[in-house]
Length: 68
Image (cartoon, rainbow, N blue to C red; front, top):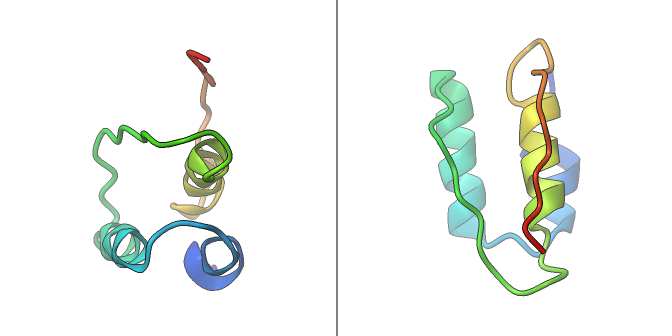
């Protein structure tokens, strides 16, 4: 399995310290509740989708809610 940063996160607007944090969580196989905030177009939804689909060996089922 590729790390979540191999393609998406390295090409995104996500700050390096956030990428590092997410990779540490992935290595520990621990996913806490996460809240993403920021201006439109900064990659919040795409980052959340990438985490859901690639964080563990099996993709998670999810419901996407967006308050915009």
